[in-house]
Image: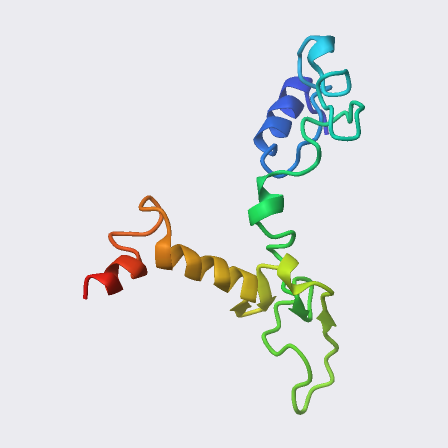
Length: 141
């Protein structure tokens, strides 16, 4: 695979929402790269080589795992029969922290995902929920 530096730079920029990476492959001044002070500095008081202290928006409002379910079998734990099912001997895996996962099993979202959805539907911003939030709807009945 022959990838140019420009292509690598674009890929790094496109993925920067979830992966802060570093900017050493981007054609920038050496002094503006993340591994040189003051760029990449964190509460640890030294350059990290990353464009963030490692915590991004998805760390605060998102899920660490959105493709794989917390409980189930198969490559993505997509079996909706998490646990024992009569007549089968399929093994299943169970995650340690369900709040890291968007899906509990192959057909159910996790409690954290349900909570976030409910809060948005109840009183979310108008650019996401509309024409009325549930709160507004019930107040005007």
